[in-house]
Image 1 (tube, rainbow, N blue to C red):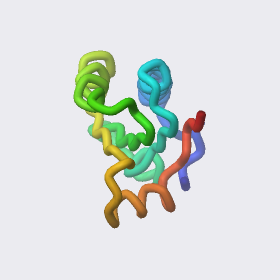
Image 2 (cartoon, rainbow, N blue to C red):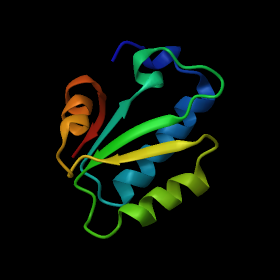
Image 3 (cartoon, helix red, strand yellow):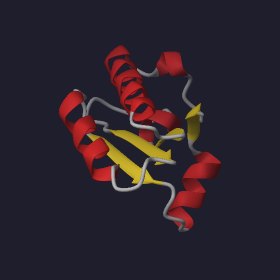
Length: 100
C-alpha cells in the first residue's frame, strides 16, 4: 500500500472503519483495501475497494448490501475465496486491514 492511512481523507477513514466493524461482525476473516485509496491516487469521487476472505457461505450479498446502505461512499466488495488472477493481485498488492 502506497498511501499512509493518515493521507486518506477523514470521511473515507470513517467509512473504512465502519466497513471493518460490519465485516468483522459478519464473520469475515480477512479484509483488504485496494485500488485508488490504497495506492494514494484517490479523488473526491473515489469509491472504497474492499476484498474479503472467509465470509460465511451464503452471506456475501447480505454483507455487500449492508455496506451499500451503511457507508457514505460507494463500495466495491470482492470475494477472495473465488480464486483467479485478480484475487492473486489483490492478495499481493492490497493493504491487509484485518486478519482474524
